Length: 98
Image (cartoon, rainbow, N blue to C red):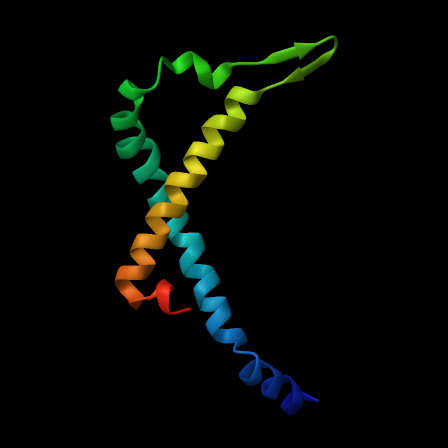
């Protein structure tokens, strides 16, 4: 039973996956800080004002915070772009060949 479990760990690269997950979790704070503290202040003059992040559409009792969603979407797109370029640089990923 134990040997089957060890075989499973080796066959499906669970240890490598766990290490990648831990590194990703550790780097999330760093990348979020890069986006919120460096990139977004540079992008802020291009946006009309900070109030757009609190924009809410009210339909009766329903309140849709679309401004907060847009802020998170922009944060995600910037974060994904940063991660892509870092991964491309570190691992020399050639997307065009795939």
